[in-house]
Length: 564
Image: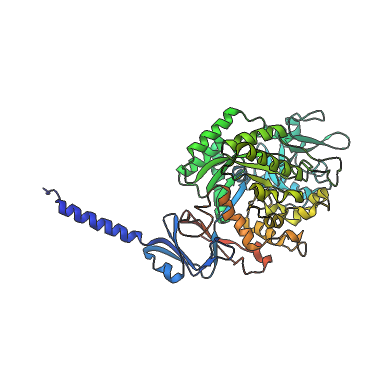
């Protein structure tokens, strides 16, 4: 059939109709939330009823009546039925690959005693007869009389395969005799760098390895394949979406790890925004740092992945006396901990990488390490001059009162994990700190009173629970979910629900220079929104821990609905 060419008039008419139809379609939202109590995070007491989303952006907020006007035939309208909606959680310090791989290992976080650990390991071994190594994570220092496991504590543990079990914080590990023998560890072995092989009173290794000494055993454990890592990340993403986590800031990592997230993004499987702080230590080469610069540039326009930060480890942890303290531990007065990296080298690297424009994280748990991190950042400001910075100190479990005002003065962020202050895990920690330092333990309220930028996270898998709701419960109550202790542990450091939510949302966006695009519910922001089963602002604070995420919206799409 012969067809005449379309006239210019017809073409013009088609163009006008198409343009008009497209404009009509564009006036409607793709998703509308109505009849809710939506906390926008624009202030501590900022609420609206409804919000409209088009594509991956919030286009309008306001009343249900007004938002319904933006609903077309193809718009999905979700009736929140009075439920609380908030910006998606931003876990600002996480080790996501390690946590995700840990989902396939033995979970020891629920164990109460060494006997519980033996039972959990035996059960796993029977269900996994082909596993070459048996691995687990999550034991707590409070489970053992001395604060650290020994062969005697673990008696009854099977001996047919090597076993390696990390503490919940990742700073200590226990290896069974077979694993110690495979690693060639004796009472004469001296670990290089920061760490220790714990010996008993007779000078015999107990199986406990502190800090970098864990690598003496872990280097013999077969590494998971690339596909195993990808599958672990997929499972980890399912977990965090069910918990309302829409952004993560990784506090360790490498260029090879970044490649895994790029694969997931390419396949449309990356359902959380990911920001990496790449690990630097005294042995990091200039070539490695050059590769970090290249990745930062390559990812500078990536909408989901960025790598513009560096992570340092300055000390260890309180429980094993490896955190650097201004004075001796209360239960070991001659011990003050140590630095994980030579102080002079750390200062040099901070100056160089700050000048290079990287955001800096420094793990500092002891009050001496916190002071030295602040000193290094202050020196970098003096040497490099004024420039945009979002440098951070991580954890800050104890701090000298005189250093608290320095966070605001230096504009350094206080990055902390409320779940680490769960009173149920504090037995060994409190004995090491002593009563004189307790008032400034996990000093969230003191830092906020001095106008510090406070940002919250989980440190997963170095925690007893990744769930931000559990962290918020601790921040507000300073009690376990069961109510211990009555009145709260160091109650003067409690903070309000609004301040805790700001630390888990808006502050996380600020930490990564993304406060203009996420962390709040308002027009123009990315549509990362979660809906909760209970109104955290009105319920009894002791009910916070039982609150659940019932809907997660990421990048404008619903990615999780409870029960579906």
